[in-house]
Length: 127
Image (cartoon, rainbow, N blue to C red):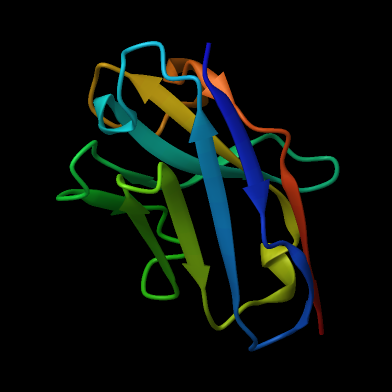
């Protein structure tokens, strides 16, 4: 079983920045770098949507068009942590942000293909 814990959410004004962190523990496959990681978000009344993903090595990243150029996903395998740096935040970025782990495989944009999920952290952008 893998446990994921997000942090770093909060209230920010439009145009501001936040950095989310997701710490992983209890790696079933033996090492954090055996997992591709993703960030998803869910706004009230909407379905969960893909935000960004990163390969196990960190060498490949992928972003939703809505965040491309504003958000950056990264990981530190020595710290078992993945990050989401968010800049130029907009009111439409308001949502609960979740990190997810996909064991022994490459990254995906599909939430159904991730094995483990964190509890989520709220990001609220005021206009």
